[in-house]
Image (cartoon, rainbow, N blue to C red; front, side, top):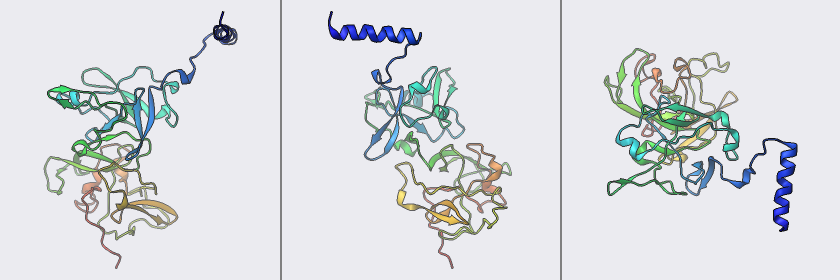
Length: 288
């Protein structure tokens, strides 16, 4: 009998003796979800075969909003009974969840964002994107690879103020989605019209008014590829770091109550005072 065979039998015997439920060597098979690194995009989520996973800006409410033809091009990423052993290094089980789609599929979510594959149509046939490619990045400015460390994400949602009125992107009354900035969990980010370039004019030194318009506290800049990273920065606000865009300090709205997709602040105290943060915002005015 060959030495390798004897070693295998001995190893199995020891395993059975000490542990009745012997587990596979973690290195024997790839993880079901893992991190890959792209030269242009950095770290992002992939499946066990190295196929990229994406998020959809229209999923502002944490639900699957990709049905019909959309679902053919962007198939859901589905797994059953995900465990920590299924995840690669740098991923936490607590960040993952599941939702049930309209057609009763079990879709994996990451940090409350449903995950998808990309399968573009080629001569009328949807061909799944291959391993190691990210051609779905930036499609229609609403599809992006799922990254573990975004500090800015893009949401595409209807603006509905605290007054119950719907607003278009120009803040006239009406319906129509607006693409705007959120944090990694889809919480809306705003700017304040009275602020100046890299100057927060709202928050007081005691932070007593911070619950009304909490500052977005971070100095890390991890953004979708369609945004210019150099336009972001951070400022010190009484010892805390606040992220900025084009010189505009970024805030949450307390009345959004941590609800993703909520953007009630657009009408508080009146329309135009606290607009959502958007890519095409003008540069903040200089401090006088």
